[in-house]
Image 1: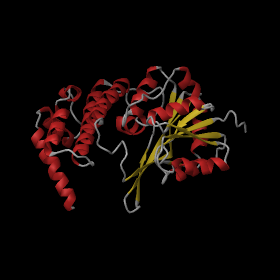
Image 2: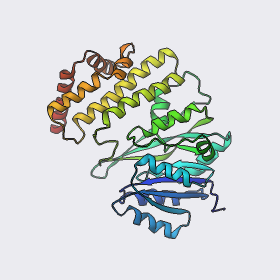
Image 3: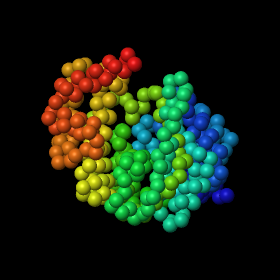
Length: 341
């Protein structure tokens, strides 16, 4: 094994995950495939994440811990791209885990056609406050590339296109096309990155294998914390997903998919306003709902598009009618009911 030129460079941005990073690193060490380097990019952690990772680096020369000033997830990933020596690059979140054969399967898959990247399915593990785990599995079945315009949106794009960590990239493809993550984004950095990846007309494949564990814990992260970027990020997500839909779906299917996508993002935004930790007053919550229902992106998307379910169509109608007080009442009642459940 040539340590100067490993086959796989694993880029693991790290920020204040001292409780979880050991499991992530151990899942890499336990791989059936051994020709890798693990780049732990410590993005200015203020806890013991760096020290924990360094313990493993001291025992395994394939593991390198690099500390940098805090710049966010995208900046840390870009830092890793610049340092990567491998033929392939994988982006690994430091509070997740992979199956023991993950890199063996991913390398075999990308080398079948010498693709620019490959996409696999994944597990979403929900960890409750008492430690109980439930798992949901994202399947990729009967999807071939180049993709024909009849693929089921829910089975493929929503589940597997929107994340960076269920893909293995050819390093030269990323570097030659100067593909890096956009700094300053939260929530949608993976979607935005892939939107630019697809613009260079890459060769890629799907395969029905589930080796990555995306672990959802009951703790605050950028994805489940309401902040100043929350609404605009989800509105921008609608634009990005509409771009994917236009590429891969026929017109009639695209109209439904766009409407459903918009409603899904609206639900995320409403959940953020009414259920996620925030300091919004009742008046501010109404103002934020007003921002949603008056968004030009949302109104344009819903104007001529019909949702696939009655429940989604009801919410779409309330948005189109600008019924902000009714929407606020429904979500306020839901919050009260959840408290008493």
